[in-house]
Image (tube, rainbow, N blue to C red):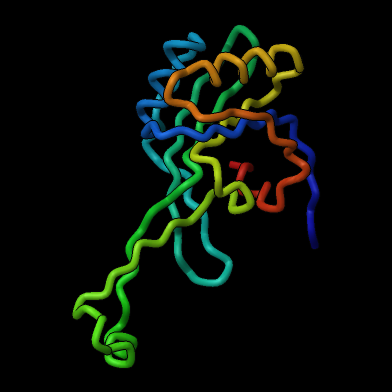
Length: 161
C-alpha cells in the first residue's frame, strides 16, 4: 500500500564547489543562521542492493519563526572494489591488478546536478523564500540556487526523516 502524505516543505537546490562545512559557514554568516552538523548522517538504503549511502546533515532551528532548516549533502562518494572473479574475467592488456571504481550516489537522484538541498519546514511566505534564494545566490562560491517543487520529486521519501 502506497501512502502519499503531503508535507509543508520548501526545498532549495544549491550547486557549489564548497564542502558541506564551508557552505554551512557561509549560510550562517550571510543568512544569520546557526547550522550545526548532526552527529549522525542521513542514511539511505539502495533499492537494488543492501547498501547504505550516507549524506551529511546540518540543522538550524529558527525558534522565532517556528521553522526547522535542514542542509543535506546530495552526493555520496564511495569506492567499489571488484571481486576476484570479476578481476580474473576482466584481465586484459589495460587492466590493473587492483581495480577500484569511484561510485557516486545521490540523495535525490533526479537532481544530480545539485550538490546540496536545503529543506525548510513550515516556511509560508513566498517572498521570504525568494529573498533567501537571492541571498544564497549572492554567496561567491555558489553557482546557482533555486526552488524545487516537493511534489515533482520521485525520491521525495528520502526527505522524510
